[in-house]
Length: 116
Image (cartoon, rainbow, N blue to C red; front, side, top):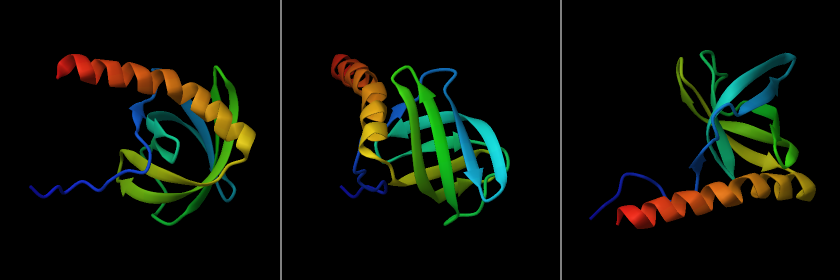
């Protein structure tokens, strides 16, 4: 059975309600809601996303601290948002991101196991 969906490097989860990200493309700065998030990137909800292959800086404030990263726009959904792949993040920021994701991934795993 062939699958049309590619294999992801990292599992993604729906971001907690009210999660916002600051992002910058050149001199353009914006704050938007986060859709899905993973160790490898995130989906940013914005009505006017930049083109694919654009380089962006992101700042995500979580209960575990601030996460700063650089990324590239990998996929655009016109009027809906953009998928960002992280391309650079220091170890401390990665640890804070993992601190946010770990309980969300556990919750998602437990919910999936109950549904099976």
